[in-house]
Length: 164
Image (tube, rainbow, N blue to C red):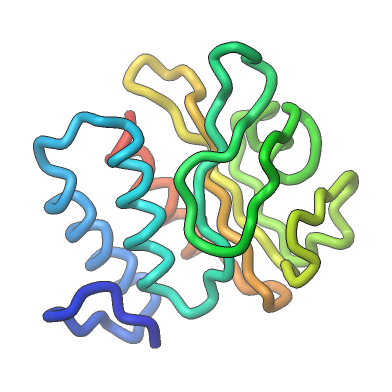
């Protein structure tokens, strides 16, 4: 299993592991207000805590083009630079404000293949304290059906606690 922190052994149970990582993220970010630093830390800590994560990162709402996402802090191979709202899994999450849990990205209408090795994906919308969409958090796996409701619930909790 991937280990996020040098002096901590994370649980093998996925829900427990998410809880442990959530606590560590909150501890590391305590007092840090910079949005980029917060996003970079979340992406790094989650990517290094779960073996089924292949690409992990944020697509941020572009203030100059409010119906477009631009790549933000991430871990992994080269990501798509821009994604329009409503396009692909990330664009669907931005458009609907709903988490997208996709077992087979190739069956998702309009899927954007930023990396052809991606097989499954979970994308969570990220809201600020006023409830405005500021980004989506995208996690891809090179394994089919790698994500489930446990991933969705914990990612939603972590992102809400970190950004809302």
